[in-house]
Image 1 (spheres, protein in one colour):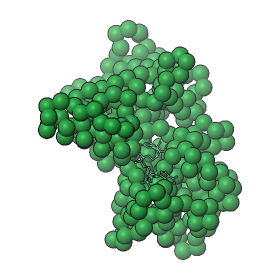
Image 2 (image 1 turned 180 degrees about the vertical axis):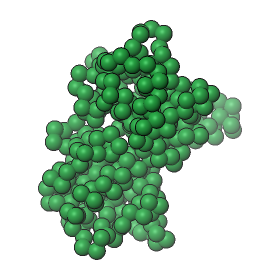
Image 3 (image 1 turned 30 degrees about the vertical axis):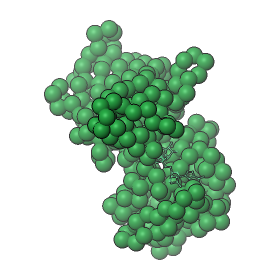
Image 4 (image 1 turned 135 degrees about the vertical axis):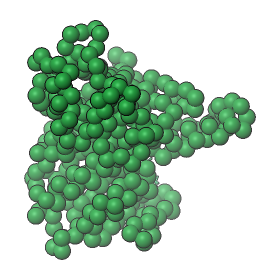
Amino acid sequence: MSVKAGSGKFNVGVVGASGMVGGELLGLLESRRFPVGELFPFNSGRRAASVRFRGRRLACSAPSFDALKKADIVFFVSNEEVSEKFAPRLAEAGVWCIDDSSRFRLSPGVPLVIPEVNGGELKPSKRLIAGPNCTLTGAAVALAGVHRRYGISELRMATYQAVSGAGKAAMTELEEELRGYLRKGAVPRLKGKGFPRPIAFNLFPQVGGFDAEGNTGEENKVEAELKKILAAPRLRISVTSVRVPVLRGHSLALWFTTSKPCGLAEIKKEFGRTPGLKFFSRPEDYPTPLENGHRTDIVYAGRLRRSKTSAREFQLWVVSDNLYKGAALNSVQIAERIVRI
Ligand SMILES: NC(=O)c1ccc[n+]([C@@H]2O[C@H](COP(=O)([O-])OP(=O)(O)OC[C@H]3O[C@@H](n4cnc5c(N)ncnc54)[C@H](OP(=O)(O)O)[C@@H]3O)[C@@H](O)[C@H]2O)c1
């Protein structure tokens, strides 16, 4: 046991405790009975906030290095700047840092981990650990087994991303647009909003800013992070990311090509033994974000079929909870593993 608290309990810091992922994370630490000694919740300090944990209300405060150093494990669920400011120095000082921001995901030497897929990368010497972007988690979990056995050489993906993937303010934006529509019969133009277009009764193919080639930040993240997690630098990936007016649960349409020949039966068999995946064999049993993307621990897949455009290509539909497996749950599962290292 390399975590420092002696009693089998661990002091835990949550930076971003008042946010969407932070709230889910606190609930999961409680419901999964993670052995928390003391809990230290942090927010920006720009507004008063408190959180409820094990029946007690705890005030959030702005993080400082000294305050964070009292923890054995710190979850970073705020933003890249905050992770950058504290996580490397804390990890250096021996505190486990589990970072949900994108700041260190592609840094060499920082494990980017989904425990079911590459949990073996967790080591006592690597105290700073990144969790991946919520969009690719479903694809990584669903395809890990097939990739290991048959090699995936090409992956195309269209994403249907819930607004909660963009944080609490984005959920409020959708709700306010819907309320405005119900009151006045038209989607209102809100001031100071985060999304580039109205989201109520709409969707748009833009998640993040555009690069010189016309790809979005999200599309590039999905590509680079998937290659790292699957240890497949030569995998060819193209992605179109779409924001949809769903509150919670990301959906993916995937087209994947295997290097070694295999049939539908072999892929179904692989899905049957892939950790963290529930595969629906009957086409009509496909998962949806409303039914399978709310506080669900696993990734759901269905509608497997051969593609009509290429002999080795298959199509799959995947749904996962962006706030659980895509963020908070994945981080807690990482913590559950590191306390056993
Ligand atoms: N939403 C998802 O599906 C998802 C999935 C994967 C990863 N992530 C990552 O998880 C992180 C949090 O996302 P979210 O969706 O929970 O965002 P959110 O709802 O906007 O919450 C952000 C949290 O960060 C806190 N914060 C902001 N600035 C801070 C500062 N300077 N110091 C300390 N805390 C600060 C906020 O505190 P205040 O309340 O004081 O502003 C709030 O608690 C992000 O890095 C995001 O990329 C999110």
